[in-house]
Image (cartoon, rainbow, N blue to C red):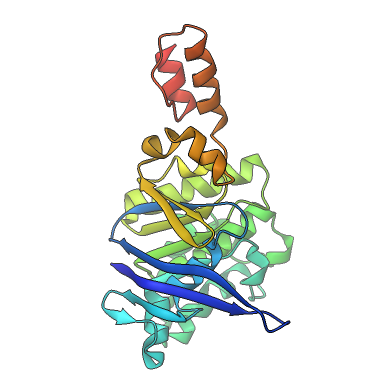
Length: 272
């Protein structure tokens, strides 16, 4: 379990002013589970992701990963093995000359045997559908393929949790669907806990639980259906409803016998 206990994080900006990014936040994320953390720009989503991975240390409070406090400097590498972080821009974490080299990097730092490294590379590349590209230079890949490689690099570490920080922002529709399908399969087949950071409400529908973050504070935690039933509050927090949910409301207002809120196109099709 990832436990966030009364965590506050304060940035010190260049003008020496302090900015409170996370405010006295409490949260428990069990394993395995699939969570989405949503919020407008500046709500504290990325800061929270980095706190859970140990890239940032709380100004006040504690983040505890499977019993290990992120403030224990001598165990920070152990925490990052447990909690993998995939960034918005895959080029920020791809460093190998080939796909295979990049995926192997983290495993090599663990001091694993060549045989085990090879097994982990095979598992990771197969899981993200990139096995045939193992000898490709990463710079020749598409944006979606680069993001798959970034996920594979984290996956090869065999993490218990994977945090994805806006992983589809730089992708087209096809690439976005591919990455989200991979994320869902990692949760369903490999039982890896997923924490999806996003401002895209269509993506939040995939999760079991959704956290709404606003100005560094948790405003609501619930299922996607519970969240999207808070229409007026959603707008107040700088978010929007999925298009299919908006459409279902319009159809309901025009006399169609459908329930609200509809979350997916498939749900709407069945209702109609």
